[in-house]
Amino acid sequence: MTAPPPSIRLATADDLPRLHPVIERAYRGESARVGWTHEADLLDGDRTSLDVLEDILAQPNQRLLVAERDGDLIGCVAVTGLANRLAYLGQLCVEPRLQAAGIGRVLIDAAEDCARRTFGADRIEMTVIERRTELIAYYLRRGYAVTGERRDFPIPIDPPLFMTVLEKALG
Image (cartoon, rainbow, N blue to C red):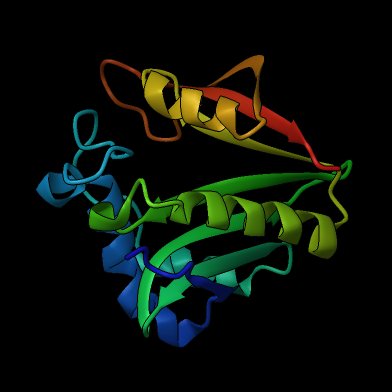
């Protein structure tokens, strides 16, 4: 039997203590290796903090959406409204044991809809660590295109990592 799709809603401050561990499990550490979208082979340490998540909620040009099923938070995505009708999609994650079940696709669709409705965006971009070719391929299948732009990874490390910029037109 297939699980029902999650409900998607705006995150609240009360969600953050339950959401933060989901993000950490999805991106880093041994728990992340259960899924396929992790950074555990490239980075260690914390992915984010409660302070960063609280800051997202406090910013008028940002929205944090959560995926919820049966009262459990199982994923999230952040959307930032930028200049020139551009939005940024970030912090996309799904509980590792639930990955590859379509939840990421539901979150991406919700983020794109939020970008259009809330910020009037006609394009949305994201960045992916360039060595994560399987993840870049996933986004290409979702209609994103590689822009050719390369950005520095936000945290200086040695050897350095770089981010591939992907963009999608929002119809």
